[in-house]
Length: 447
Image (cartoon, rainbow, N blue to C red; front, side, top):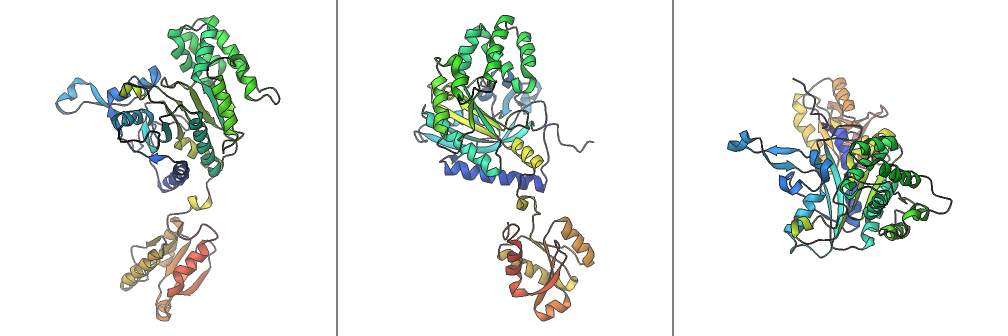
């Protein structure tokens, strides 16, 4: 029997969780400082809640849950694991409409599941870190979201990220201009969304396979090739928007870029007419964040003014963004971006057991140190000191406290620094303060 987790999922060992919690801590802190409130929803939804919201490609990736009990033999599904956090949010807003403020800003950090093909940075079970604002069409929503995610990435140490923005209305105009028949618009966007993964030749082949007329494909990709060229010197987004400057959505993007210059996103936002985003619920601005050494994005989102209306019967303006936690962690780990304190072990000190009779005293010392805020482990049995030191080293404990006979008689504790190998005797009453002081240059007491 294989002991590996299912394909596309992972076991999270202690170091993995410490890295994840570090990133989540930064994300949560920034989201809350921008006025977003926490929300959680169930891991699974009624299947009709999810189906039909993501387009053809998304529907194929939903993990369905078969009916149970006496209905199991039907092979039918009535529930499904959530595919993202946006559709559940739309359901919540429709259900609790009278209990929520006029402008509802929420953040949500929970796992989602997709029956996707696993790859580097792409999993079947993964966390999303979402922010969404509902109730207004104001561009300040997009700008604030771009600023928040920029601040998060900068606090995590990213400097080379790029925020690509486009507008679904511009894409629709380009598809129409290029001669793509309206029934094939969604097909074309699904193919175009893969441009950064399969290149122009791959997109051309996929569009042909989807039955889009060759002349329309050629005309569309000609525009997209120009859109991905470097802008003329000092022209900025005006160069990119040139061919579609008169179309709905162009002024929207221009305003977002200009307003973002007053925020943490300054210098990071670029207009990219080739950006498609495959989900069908987007209605206006679409957003994606990329870094040079990752195929795919660190996160994406956009405006979806019609999604809540699928549940409520009337449209509610909405815009959101989702950071991909796993992809951020993959890049940070490969680049060595985590601070030293995140990579340290889970304890600050280990207490030895000198002999069977001193167990109670070792436990009492551990309680004293824990009361001072230190993270402390107690070796579980009387053993040779060498073995106890070896275990402490495996736990990456910086210090070992030794309650030997001589030290106890003097009211002291032996303190061994496993980083330097030095060992000294410290007054028991001063042990906690000594450990905290020696930890401070590295990571702060207890941290």
